[in-house]
Amino acid sequence: MGALRAEDPVGQAIAAVCAGVVLVAVISVTVASWRRGPALVHA
Image 1 (cartoon, rainbow, N blue to C red):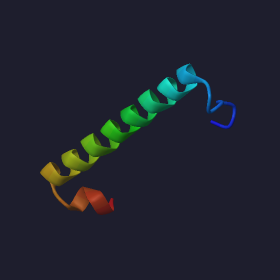
Image 2: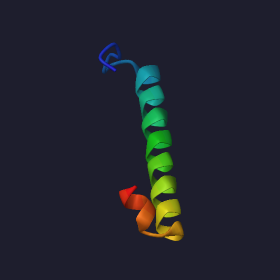
Image 3: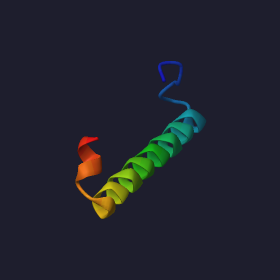
């Protein structure tokens, strides 16, 4: 991520999209773990 320049709007957009995808993935896994049971959280 160090190669991205702060003044590069394309780089910022790509970074934002990547961050959003990661955030959605984490939330999805967390919700799935809650629905299946708390045992998977510690696994």
